[in-house]
Length: 161
Image (cartoon, rainbow, N blue to C red; front, top):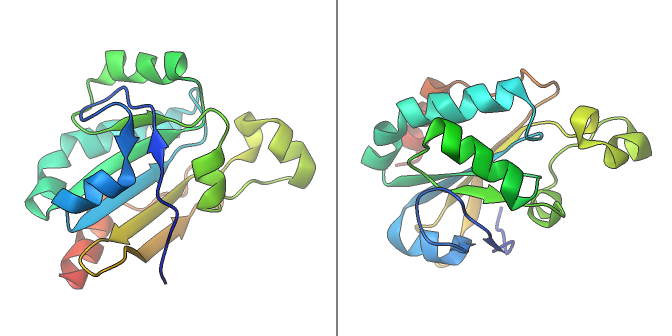
């Protein structure tokens, strides 16, 4: 599956601000996008910390990780201040990028009004080794806890190499 959903988002973490997906693909074989639920989600906070603790393993596989939070820069910056993430942490306040990548939203129209209980986590692995980036893997969470384990993500990348 190919993707043309390149984007540029405000980045409060490591790397350039704004962050361009196209530029990331120039230096990496893979880009792992972590679409978070919202600023308050404890499972999202746990995931970004877990990835931080294993970040070098992703780097060893020439993979950049980008966490995308559907919140304004001010709220996303609080995560960076608290967790000191070594990878890009982007604000997507109007959910344009998460929408372009079809991040699941539960409860129909009601879920679209409130990301607090509507937006579900999603993980997308992009492969930049070809002429055009392709979506190599996705995981759509069916609950706030439904996220792939770090080892499973690393194994997926290894299988693609």
